[in-house]
Image (cartoon, rainbow, N blue to C red):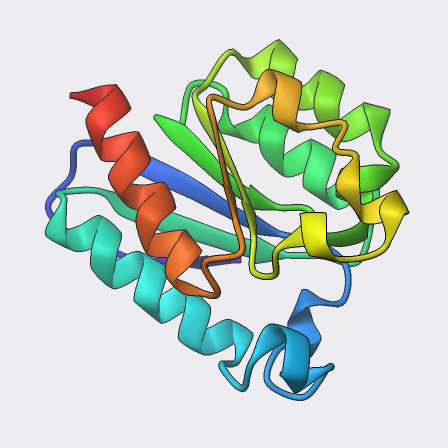
Length: 152
């Protein structure tokens, strides 16, 4: 888990799910050439400019993501989540987001609505305050902006 330090209106938890550790090399025609480290830096810089800190975690393990969401209760002011394939399969992540009662922004780098049918359903969207789809890695910056607005 990586953290940024900056002036703080609170911490935003930034979660990335399975296979996002391969950003920059995995299907660059879909996901681009930006690495996960680049995404984390971009997100942390946007958050810092808005007065937030970030804590970033990527895991290929559903339980680690659930544990991080649970730990965010009382320590974070919001969540940005790109759950990768778990978006389409995980009731556990949905329930965790719902349980912690924090504003959450769901992010997808690609436009999932232009892809395979199974990618067009999200278990998370109904419990997230905002969904950003198809904006590339800039979607993470938009997610920070959405939380900034929501949190006033």
